[in-house]
Length: 333
Image (tube, rainbow, N blue to C red; front, top):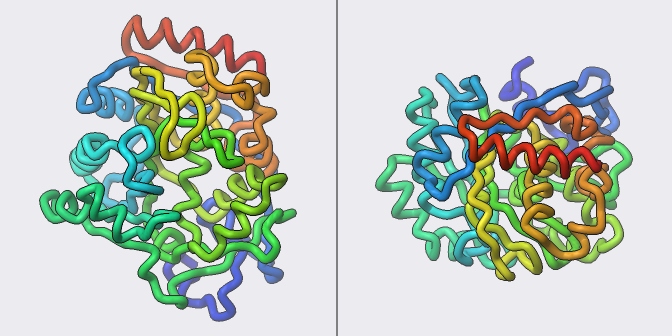
């Protein structure tokens, strides 16, 4: 049974999903964790302030093409319309779309749910409607989807009271590509990168529970990621919020572009960058794999289990030198 056939068979609206796949014998609505994440993964790192060349180089370093011939759902970070690094830089979006087209993507559709502001207002203020028209790219405002286009997902050992609703276009997508920013999160998340970016796939009515669950919030963020598996992740770390966030905060220049397929690995390397830059105590005083978003994602089998499983690759001396600094930081956990 393919994904589209499965989604058509959903009647009750509660499904068990893991990395976008249907798990046989799961009739309770609980998601079953994979036995283990991948034993090793590659994160491409390019040291640059040039998005156009940096994105191309980073994706090329991965040595794979997961989008050729596929309809791509592209998820930016448009939680608000505040300027980068609060939200995805439009230049990053334009360059990534061009790169996906060059890799043979059959079609590209941007999908997003913003908040607290209305998604339509954020998309307007960011100029996304005009961008999509100019680039002939589709656009789905998840906030406008009717009730029947949301599916309830209940993770294993869930910290959500009754699961959460995920936009069905995400579950039905042939290929999901995510682009995120590099920043701290001053409202309980600690940091917001690829794992946190997935919150934009969840219905807005679930946000009250997430934002009021201070003790479980980081674990709940990780749990949302059981609902899909990205084919490609791009992190724009040219600048970063090193404190406060996610809308505003003190910034530092990092001049890095990261690419990979493993959310744990991307966020772990991103945290190493924040530590190298110098960040707040929540970042500096906690080892990377002890961060609750990371630790819970490891429990769920969403990616690599330890820093030794992350291979950072670069294509020039500046990148290799910086990667070595990050490896030393990662090695501490």
